Length: 502
Image (cartoon, rainbow, N blue to C red; front, side, top):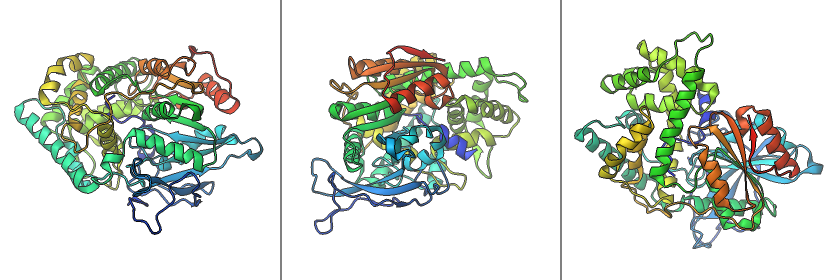
């Protein structure tokens, strides 16, 4: 699927409102990349500006280490890559099951920064699991992809991403081409090796180094695609695995972007139906949101400091606010303030979408997302391809359709070819995998969960439905979802496929 709007970004909003180890090679002193290597766990440093998520060092219960992996698995004795890892040990050591490895999505999200920030949600899981996460290759401290400098990125994300005429189309295509060239210049060595298949191989090596016979896994959003690819490659190594906020593995980038347009439009409608009830700000209509975006296209508003709120930043901010029902209040206030000439809140939301910290530094989030997406998918869309599809995207979403259609240019001039047209997640012989779909999910629409369960295969994909809002289900607060997932991960109780919560 296309991943033009970040999947798995809610933690960044809550926290908002130098790779440590790079590529190395040579024969003498080459790090061990086998499953026999010993991880050197030590106190964790504070996240650096390459990592989205938390901004302070984790507490004493957290340890960090570096896993050494082959840069190119076809050359296992060649150059190496360092994968940044983090863990908190299980509290009930007598009944410990093993390690539970988390990927929070993106692709491009830093697991090292995100897991400690969200760990309170996983307190019960920590009783029997060591909680483990990592920055996947090309992300954060794991040789995170860098393209443009911070000031250049400010201009790039503020620029018009929904062109209205041929001149604006030409400008958009030129910017995307320059961005791809900058990525090749600044991160070209790692770009051919950042895809999902290599990340899945890294996870299997991680499993072995951690001492687990099976991979116990908690994948969110894009993390479900990574988990599905792992299950396909290593079906006999699958332990207890949860897929939450599920990517549709049968969709190509165009189909994925169109599904996201429909998903965000559905979430916007649900927000508008629920808006009100004593809110101090008036609830916007879809017509008012469209009018605001059109106005911003002509004349940006004052934002934060000298920065202004543009149409592109506002559109990203509105989409960002739909990832969680908890953030709907910021959408109401942000639109109301912007209608009065104040763009601060929508700009802050847009910054969260783009991985920008308040100090002006950008994480590798969006650069990594683009690099991994383009390394995965073969499709390269031209301007005529997109213009042909624009009416369908606009019908799917009058608010988000143009933005998502034009996002398909992200890989057009990418310097590395893609691996597949859609990923293979079939996993015959794997243990049951719990697949949780949220009916109101904007970023990974509900139909993806059903398709993932089918593609995993009979007896493998077990579907759980949550009738709710926001991206993902486990962290929604729904007691039924939490109880069902915990029974499965902690006690091995596989629910009947088709169970419904909410």
